[in-house]
Amino acid sequence: MRIGVLALQGDFIEHEKILRELNVHATQVRKPSELRELDGLIIPGGESTTFGKLAVEYGLIEPIRAMCNAGKPVWGTCAGMIFLAKDVGMRQPLVAVMDVQVKRNAFGRQVDSFEIDLDIPVLNAIENGQPHPFHAIFIRAPLMERVGKGVQVLATLNDGTIVAARQNNLLATSFHPELTRDPRFHRYFIERVGKGA
Amino acid sequence: MAEKQIGTWAVKVGLAQMLKGGVIMDVTNAEQAKIAEDAGACAVMALERVPADIRREGGVARMADPNKIVEIMQVVSIPVMAKARIGHFVEAQVLQALGVDYIDESEVLTPADEENHINKNDFTVPFVCGCRNLGEALRRIGEGAAMIRTKGEAGTGDVVEAVRHARAVLGEIRRIQNMRPDELMRVAKELGAPYELLKETAELGRMPVVNFAAGGIATPADAALMMQLGVDGVFVGSGIFKSGDPANRAKAIVEATTHYNDPDIIAKVSRGLGEPMSGLAVRSIPEKEQLAVRGW
Image 1 (cartoon, rainbow over the protein chains, first blue to last red):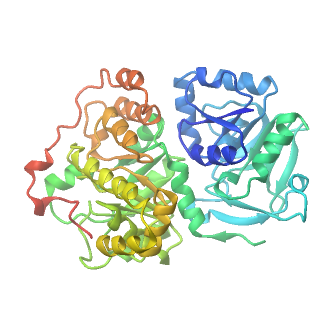
Image 2 (cartoon, rainbow over the protein chains, first blue to last red; image 1 turned 90 degrees about the horizontal axis):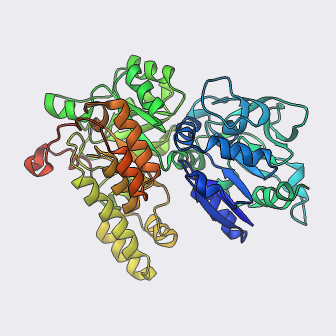
Image 3 (cartoon, rainbow over the protein chains, first blue to last red; image 1 turned 135 degrees about the horizontal axis):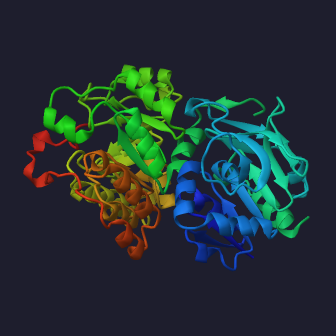
């Protein structure tokens, strides 16, 4: 299985590292030609406006959208989630494939960035043994204010705020599993989303 | 941990991880901040005067006017950093109260304390600090810096010092990777570096925080040079808004930073950018007027 990580800017190396630990072939994507022959794509954390400008300039928006529409697994973390969303309440270049309304910098500025343990039911099936919470790191994070009918909510904060969701082959998280040592979310992406399960 | 925890080491270091592969640009007003964001900057540094002007005009350089910082925070959606003087922990408290996303405890401003740097562990907001070598970098991390940059020589447009400092840091990391623990203690003594951080750096093969280049970067090729040497991203200060065509130069530097290993793209984006900043060779500056020697 070959998974690309969009490497225009952001924490793409962290995603690559976890993928390699899971014996997945991971490659960096900066140009449309590098999307060919990929089985899936991760759009990392970073600055969504920076991704947007570079993706437009180098002709990446359309091919990424085509990949999403072709049913290949695509996962966006934080800025990546913004990049996949149809509506972010601001004018900026987006792939605009996920039927979610995202609010950027929803929790405030950096001094409001936080860590918290989340119960994520879909991860419990990934590893045998006792279900345990997923440690989630939120950095100037976005949230999902509204999700469409075909979107499954995977995780919320105690107040009901949606922070992880799936729409068939598309996955979005407000937080950064790539900044933790816990590979369960990456496994969920590869073993479940990647196989249409 | 069922409750939110803020100001942790992971979220401080984490924001810097999100900036990797990007360009952080010095801006002095809302209009410049917007140009930087539109060019694809991953963050901006709000300041009163760019280093080239600080160098030319002299006098005491301090934290920027809070009005200016807030004005910049209001117009961009990307992170906003601001500079505090070395050792001036009250300027840092003010910047935290304003809600800036990162504080640069910077040698570009006139130091407020010639003996001590800020105890950055006291703050919720993360700090970036300059360094000339690995020992200096690890001392700053020991005080709580969550991101490191080379000092270079700000306001010159001469990349030579940034190269020197990046090579020093990255070369020292390569050197310590094959050392035994007993040898590491000796090196810790030589470098004046905290032993535990030096050991962690040797094990990781890199510093435990993100490491950017800064100080003298003025062209797309300068940015790509620093990236190829092994830094995680670049700061560009005077190089953009002291050049003939800031918007296009800013965009070109962003593209060269992303595609730093692709000479065809660097060649393409380097064309027709107009005049670069005029520049000042570091060798022509007496040592006591160099900014990089401030702090230890």
